[in-house]
Image (cartoon, rainbow, N blue to C red):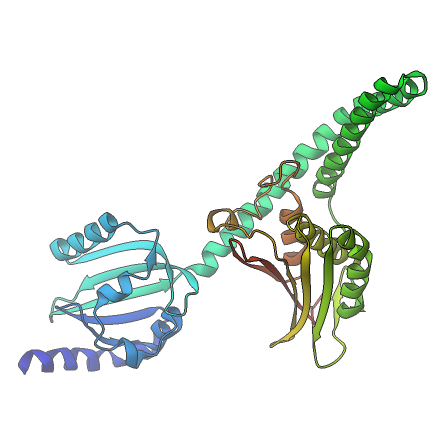
Length: 355
């Protein structure tokens, strides 16, 4: 009874800290049972405090991803021997949302109570990822600009001589020259993609209806889809006209590439669903759902990296450029995929942007 009273008095003593502290706080007893948590913990772990109270801390440790059994064992060993321990890890909340957290546990000297401080570093990690991505694009741009002229000159010469040879070539030779010409065109396409990334983009913002833009893109891509026995279906779930302030040309390019990618992963035909939905807080989402083979979880983490591609003839620049464009509009891209069930790209764009 005395032990329980000490724990209660200790919790009461720091009750005001619970209410004011910006990080998540958890009080544990010597058995590893949760005595109390603050509101920040509820937000970080996405679970009500009443469900956490009495839970053993081992249940929370099971949420940590990418942390081996040995790492967890070493953490607990250090805590027992030194009275404090800390580490960083990726975790999934009780609702399955990924978070990056920093945890520091220390045993309080005046009671058999452990104080756990949990800091959500997800925003910091995501910011670093965006900065790394921007730096990669900047480096890529400098590289592309420096080699563009070196490639263009010999390509122009090759193309010209190929056209001259084509006029006097035999039927067999023309077949070979046709292959060479196709490869030169492919090289030109790759070079164009490099230059798109390398040159500074001047955004031209206009006020337009996003529904009109998506419909225009779908109509433009429809013939290519039909050739692959694919039907494009647009579903509009918005209550009224949805106008945004954005660079119409760049968003059009992003949506066209997204539908093109969806067509390419559906060689056996099928349906591509394009959904326009309202979101809370003045956001609209444009979802493009394919019925392709899907993307495994390892590749899903890399698809926005420059040069990463699973296509034999891909450059790996399309999605990194799309991500840059959407983020420049204060938007985000979410991807959901399952092997054998297809992939959905969600482009979330604010309807009100202050520029």
